[in-house]
Image 1 (spheres, rainbow, N blue to C red):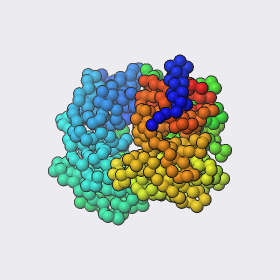
Image 2: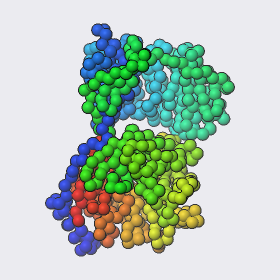
Image 3: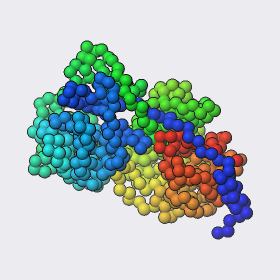
Image 4: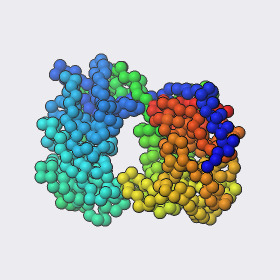
Amino acid sequence: MIMSLRGFAFLFLLSFAAAHAGEFEDLGMPVRSTSVSIQAVTVDSDGTGRAWGTVSGDKVRQLIGFDMTTGDTTVVDLLPYRESNIQIAVGQNGSIYVYSGNPGHFLRYDPETDQLVDLGVPNSAARYWLGGAHAIGPDDVFYIGTYPEARLVAVDMGTDETIDLGSLADDDRQRYIINPAVSDDNIVYAPVGLHHRELWSVNPKTGSKQQILPDDLQKGPGAPRVWTAMDGQVYGRIGGDQFLCQPDGVVLDQTAPPRAFPERTTVGDVRVQEVDEKGRLVLKSTRGEIRYVQTEFEGIGETIFSLGDVADGWLFGSAIKPGKTFAVNLETGETRNLGLITHGRIQVYDFLHHQRGLFAASYTGGYIDRLSVDDALKGRRGESIIKLSSRYAQERPTQLLEGPDGAIYTVTTPVKGHLGGALARIDAENLSTKVWRNLIPDQSLKSLAPVPKTGEIFITSDVRGGTGATPTASEGYVFLWDPEKEQVVFKTRPVPTARRYGTAVSARNGLIYGIAQKHFYVFDPVKRETVHVAALPTGEVRFPGMHPEPIGPDGLIYGIARGAIIAIDPRDNSVAVVAKHASLSHGRGLFVTDDKFLYYGSGARLMRYKLPR
């Protein structure tokens, strides 16, 4: 293909501008947390009490302890075992047992000697586990339910032996173990999901295991909830159904309240509550008296996930795990940590500033919330408009768009283990909602772009489903949705080899520019034909890939991919690298302001780059 003179000039000007005009600025950490949830307390031989918790953030994985008298801080670095969730338990021998890393390692830490010992990897396939997926048996064995094989692993805290009890899933769509419980007769009951509900009994001594839920209780996504009761038996619940767990089945209509386990965060008459946002250990006596011990903990930066819309001069964004919202003032550069103000607590995928307020799309739960800008800036929680997971089995709303009809639209990825995303519409006047599922069978929906000339909406799909789902389709699609007819009126495959279509943008020339893995394509929504396909110079982009609107007098479309800022010029469909920087190699989130500043997250740091004019 021969490039036009305009294309050569565009490439040259961008290269020159990147070399001489643009500067990368570090705006700091908008979300920095000093709060620590205390999970255990140990007492040394000299009577020193230490409170323990874990912290995870940008390039940080730590077991952290605080002297309850002086506030002196002990930090045990777990990052060498690679980033992962962390679970801890205190053995009867006074050591802290940790499960962390990728693959998961059991570790033993002795608070008195400050020695960390790697006890090994019980199974190399175990690389992730949910926050509550652990239990401790009566014989001091620490159990963990892991992903992606729904595998139960353990460590004997008396002997330091690691144990692999195997996978509890016959169906490869079942990849999670959720919050197991152990009876006093030492049978582990492990809820398995999340494609559908299962409950497995495991006898650690014999290795025997059995799925014990009847067929009618297995229907529907999720997993049962189980707990150990005062009588030493394990009971469970699914909705309104309650039952007693036994090794070979369940007995319906039986229940008992959970056992009050020995308090793990109490020494004498003092309970450790937390380390607060001022870095203080909060201690509460049995008489209700509260005192504070200042610690040395300075906090950690939390990884930036997304940047959304601008409202009243503030650009809103989200961290990840937890999904705390932050905002940056575009005039002064001030940043604010607004905390958890959405109902989805893991991350916010997108924000949309609308005349009815600031809308946010968050995970988990597939929530769409509405907030006033003033409340959001004061850290006040919004109102939930819809929870897509509870009725529609959708949990990741990836983009928000005001459609040509004035309604607010979002597209989704389904819950874990399932295929088939959805399109949801929120009426801007009365906030009523309507949802259409599986518009492209067994495919998630990823991005939306308006088509002003026809009043339609351009939507992209991805063969992948919720975490753990096995795709059944081999090629993704793009399609046109007619809001008036409420139906798909056209679909096609601009890049026939592509399994995943990502962000799509409506350019000022009326054409749609979209990402298809390592390519970009140009689609004419009026003629309903693909007019151009080309490879990206940087390979596949990361979420969100491109800014959702054209920028500047030339209507350039900007994106981030593999350490570089790229720009597509709709005037001749050329693409060029604008600038490269080490911080872009792990950049997340992307937003370009009208004055041509490109903002993005690099780990926990908020960065910006002045684009060439």
